[in-house]
Image (cartoon, rainbow, N blue to C red; front, side):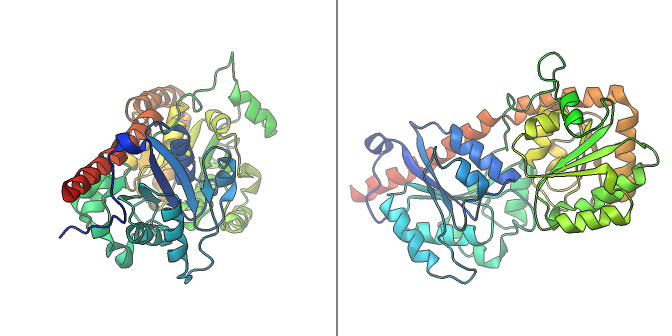
Length: 398
C-alpha cells in the first residue's frame, strides 16, 4: 500500500522553481562524509535545487564554514531522548515549505529526519548512507521507516548490494551515487608550480627526501588507528627515516598517543589534528593508508588517488572498487598487521611501481569518481523523485 503524505498539493517543478531540499545530519565536524556534503551543497545547480543544512546538534566547523552560502539550522536535538525534536523539525520543514529531505548517515538523524519529513508532508524523502557498519548500521528502529522512504543512496556498487541484501531495503529503492572529489583541488604536487612535497616536509622539520605516509580520518575507534601505530613500529627497522602524518581529531587521540609512546614510535608520528589544507598535505605523501574496520567508499582514498598518491588500505566495504592491487595500490585483510606491513614495505621499496599506481589512481578517479558526476547524480535523483510525486498528486486531484 502506498502511503500518501502530502499536506499540500504537489505542483510541477515548472510552477515552483528550484526544489527546496534539506540535508539532515547530526553535526558537521571535519570528516569524510561531512566534507562530501559541503562539496555537494556548494555545487548543486541553484536553478534545480536550493539546499539547506539541518544539524540536529551543533553546526560544527564545516557547518559554520558554509553558513554564508546556504541556510544552516542547528540545535534541534537537546539530548538522546529528546522527543520534542520531532515537532521542532516538523515546524521547520513546514515553515520552509520543504520539497525534499535527505538524511545523511544512520542513527538519530536518519530516524528523526525521515519521520519528521513524513509527518510534515514533505514530498520526497531519501537517506544517504556512507558505511557498512557502525556508525552507519541502520538498526531495527530505522528499518521500520523503510515504507516512508523514496530512496536509499549507496556510494558504490557493492555498497548498494549491501543495502539491499543485508539492510533489507527494497532493491528498487536503492540508488548508487558514487562519491566524488574535486580533482582540481586534489591534484598531484608539481615541482615547478606547487611543490607540496618539499613545502610540507620543511614545515614538519623533515629532510626533503624523508619518506612520508599519511592518513586522513576522524580519530574514532572504527578507523582503527592503533593498527597504523603498530605498523609504524614494525616498519621502523626496515625504513628508519619513515615518518607518518595523522590528520584528524576525535576521542581516540590520547589512545593513539599512549600506544605510540609505549611502542617507542612517538617521534615518527605527527598528529596534525584538524586541518583545512588537506590537498597539499595529501599531495606531499609517498603513500596514503587507511585501516578502517568498516567503510563504504571512503572519500579520503579518492582524494589521495586524485593527488596521484597510491593507497594501502584494509579490504572492507567497497574499498576494493577503488584500490586495485598492483594498479592503484594494495589491499590487506582487515586487522591483519603482517599483511599491512608487507604491503607498505613493498610499495615503499619499489618507486617505479609506486609512481605507476599513483598515475593510474588519478586516472581512475577522473573516470569514475569526479565531483561533477556525484552532484549530477543527486540532482537527477531528487528531481526525478519529485516529478513522480507531482504527477501522482496531479492525477489524484484531477
